[in-house]
Length: 467
Image: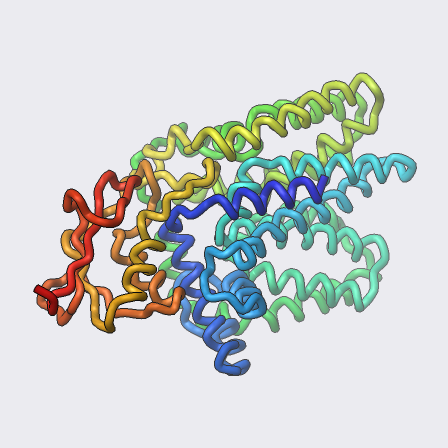
């Protein structure tokens, strides 16, 4: 299952050339700074940027990991499969950790079956697949949450200093992945640890101290930015009422997160466990999924991707119900089997966005589940053409915004400069005609030598020093 999923995911990435979403491009830019540190052998600068550097609103564990992998691949273009495929590891790691969690909630003789079902169901989570194909920290956050909960299980099963240290490292990395991490793990961690027995106090204290040492420097040095970030999240930016806020994440999970097949399988599994009075996996799913949703529902600023780390809880439900007998297996098998064509359809045929998003977020809806696009809006052809021309700055005449129907991102010219630099054809790119330049890129001119079908226009390149 893992090998087939990986092969299909890599094939999707290889076929997709669409310019990156605005948020995604920001994370790539941050990763490029870490890449620069490593290329110049500045390990101290790398660590300083990770732990105390002012890098904007988000912690930088994800950007640092992408930058490190980017450096190891030795390639320059982040859109290359060898670089972009690192993001797939987040869902794979999430699935493996979720499988290990699921086996702890069934009879030992059924553990392997439950683990296989949980791994398969996690790999079929639509939103997880969408995020793991892009440079988005929420994909890494899925893995951070799942691995943290697995580590907490291991510590409670056999308390030791080494397992306490392991949990602390994972907690610290989770805190350095995104600010919502503690909100997502709070309820399930309390449930897993329960009332700590005496042998747990010292390992738990070590875990807390280790996490504080790892994440504390960044949190303290970026306290002002985090206050601004939190204030913006609390204020929100939509006009939706209470009902719209309460329905946002449940509807997101049904339509985008799990998709109807896995959603129905999870609900059926919950009823199966209720009838069987199997409380342990049911309670874990309740505190993991519903506990996190309850917290997210009361944060005015909402995006479907924020709920992604909660979705593996559904895989634990399905796995626990699967092992209860043949009749239940048929129901669960139907849901998991239908999830395969659903993920395939949303990855090759349809673009899914949240229908209520305008009530919560009036901006362009971000789309993570979509078919791959071979249209890079002419960037490769422009780079190839400019690489054959003499040195000189470039003016983009009549710069074009990218329509929401194509991508939620910045204007076309903002992608050209980074693309040229990463392709070895670095040139200054301007949109102000008063800036010094030699070459003019005219967008929208009929009969231009380069076609931009996504924007329904052409592009021509003119050398101002030539008649």
